Amino acid sequence: MANIYVSSGTSFSATINITYPAGSTCTVSNYKKTWTAPNTTGSWTFKANEVGHYTVKAVSGSKSKEKEVLITAEGQVETITLTFETILWEAGSD
View 1 (spheres, one colour):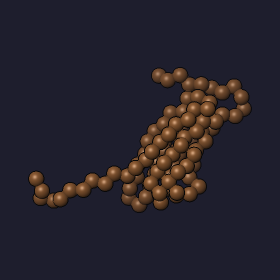
View 2 (cartoon, rainbow, N blue to C red):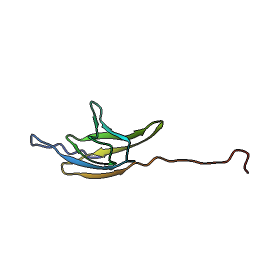
View 3 (cartoon, rainbow, N blue to C red):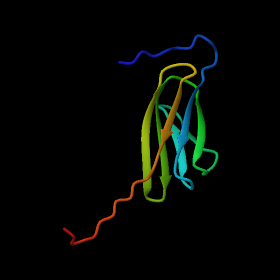
View 4 (cartoon, helix red, strand yellow):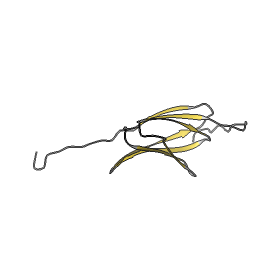
């Protein structure tokens, strides 16, 4: 199990730098709240205010992609890149 740092001060800040498909809606969730990116440009710097697991998700129509990140320390910086995958195949091909 990972060691989790508990800040002794009144504020806690860690950063999750997120790149996601432009035009998508991006959210970050933890066990008690969901935040939505202020725009759909494809880039968001999210400031986590406490330790814990965060789920980063991008959605566009029927496409979605998500990744988990664990924040354990004050000042921690994580980078997440979300991309949608398209699988193409031709029916009847070998």
